[in-house]
Image 1: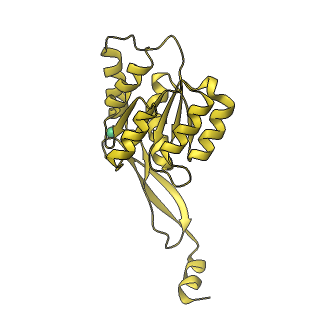
Image 2 (image 1 turned 90 degrees about the vertical axis):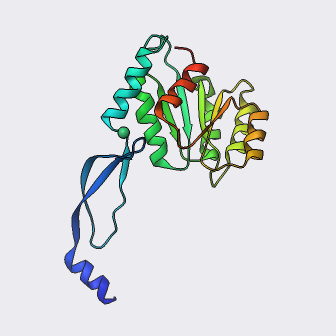
Image 3 (image 1 turned 90 degrees about the horizontal axis):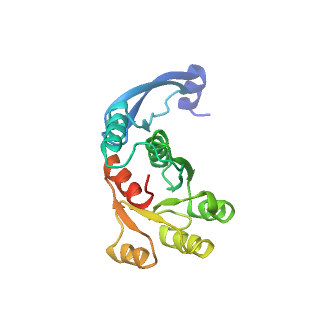
Length: 192
Ligand SMILES: [Zn+2]
């Protein structure tokens, strides 16, 4: 055992304050206290702040469509970044959508093969380690040729974007985008 390890065992876990950052506006809107092993560096949590949530809700309510949809749509969110999945889910759930998150293409295809009838729209990240967005989309399209998907990308090549649009994805949202833009795109595809 090295000196550092002895030291941390002696000190045990320590309580640290972890900031919770809004993924949309990047403000710190909350903190959480966690007991973590001594010397561990802290990483922030992500979520959606009340201001951003209110803004999306108000703007959705002010649009030409009624606020709540008569139909409850199911949206499958596929992204290897768990925080991003959670943030999209936190944003869409209060608007009345049923959200399911998958952290990889393989899991998402597996889920879709069983429950595609419950999924009205797929939000699909382009760059994922196990199965990329394109391959995931092609596999899902084999299960349901009428699949509706919005592709989300941070830094995709133009050729990749062209390929997935040519394969039938409905549109591409480039990060960073605002929650309002996300909700507008969804409402264009799934009329309330
Ligand atoms: Zn915010």
